[in-house]
Each structure stands twice: as structure tokens, then as C-alpha cells.
Amino acid sequence: MQVTLDAKRISHLLALLLASFLIAKLLQVKFEWAPLSAWGLGISISCQVSNAILKLMDPESNFNENNNLDDNEIKWQQERKRELEKRKERRIGGDSNDKKKE
Image 1 (cartoon, rainbow, N blue to C red):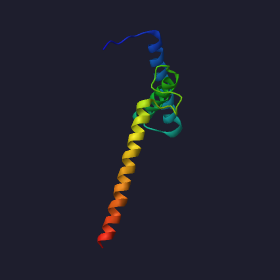
Image 2: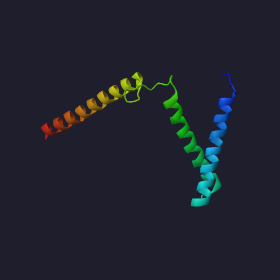
Image 3: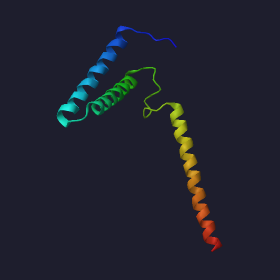
Image 4: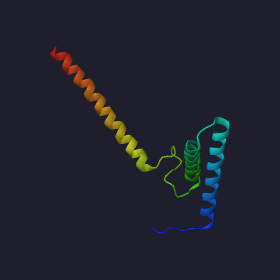
């Protein structure tokens, strides 16, 4: 794997560090959080927001206009739904068989 360093990536890293720092300082000053806890939450928040923004702006991402899900995700959800319906039918069928035995 090759790592490329360019101005865009470095500026993005600096923006993430700055956002994490500001969130951590806010938590420390306003809410009297411990430094490590504040940094942990600050980094988590800034990375999650950055990741969401990049996914929305990336034209090559796996998202499309159909509920923001790609074809594989839709297929997986449909299979999961069928599997859960089959389980439900087995439970209902199993309960009715038990009642007949009594």
C-alpha cells in the first residue's frame, strides 16, 4: 500500500486536529471533563462528521439516490427481511403445533 501526502490530505488532517482540539477544550472548560475523556470524544465527533461529509461529497462512493444505499446493501436488507419472516413463520407454526398436542 502506498501512502500519498499532498496538500489536500495534510490540510484535512490539520482541520481534524483543530476541530478535535476545539471540541476537547470546550468539554474541558464548560463541562469540566478530564483531558483524556474530552480528547477521546472530540476526536470521535470530528472524525465521524468528517467521514459523513466525505461520503456525501465523494462521487465514487457506494451511495446513490435510492435511500442512500447501494445495490449490495439493498440486497442484503431484502435477504435479512426474508430470513426474519421465515423465523417468524416457524415460531408461529411451532406454537400452533404445541397447542394441538395439548
